[in-house]
Length: 84
Image (cartoon, rainbow, N blue to C red; front, top):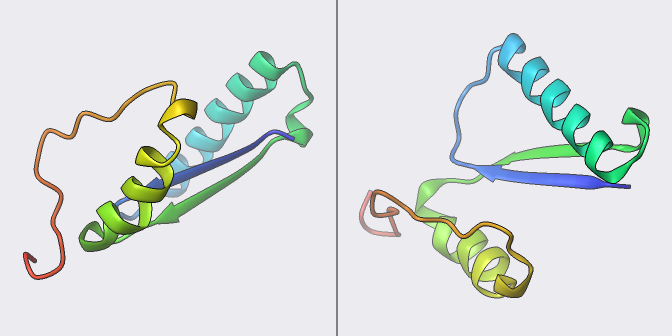
């Protein structure tokens, strides 16, 4: 406790980017929740753009709108099946 889950469009991370993200998020989450860094877990899951709206937006954003602390404001249309 706590567990952080990040879903994103697929991309390659360098080892430095990965280590930096883990360190920064772990430090922030540990401080805000008042826990030791070892109590924090983090999963980073790539999601293809063509399934973003059905696999992430609908169940994670629309269905849990009451839990969101920040709403997304997509600057570009999200590709959907058939519009690759």
